[in-house]
Image (cartoon, rainbow, N blue to C red; front, side, top):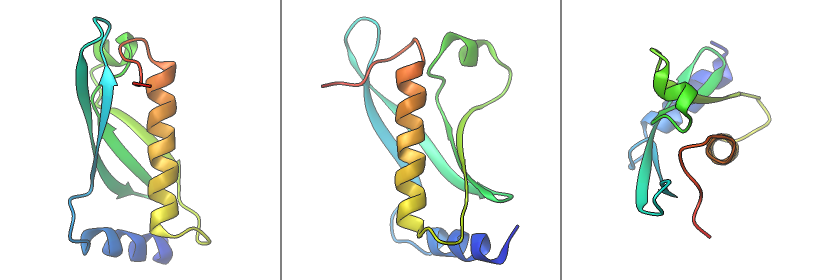
Length: 101
């Protein structure tokens, strides 16, 4: 793990809020549900382990994750925003949920 990633990890760990996203989605019946995403650093990436958003992920024995590579010129806020965007793209590409308007 690079030193700047360790610094980002320490900044996330020292934050007063929990390192997670809760994203509102609509299931196939049109009912509101929430996808919970736990955020953490691993290697030189920031990841979100989350609920499955596709039938392929549902059938997998692995925990569904979204991931982005960390760069030294991005702040923690920028990394979190890009990770959030990646999760939204995974939801859009999946077949279990839709994003509300």
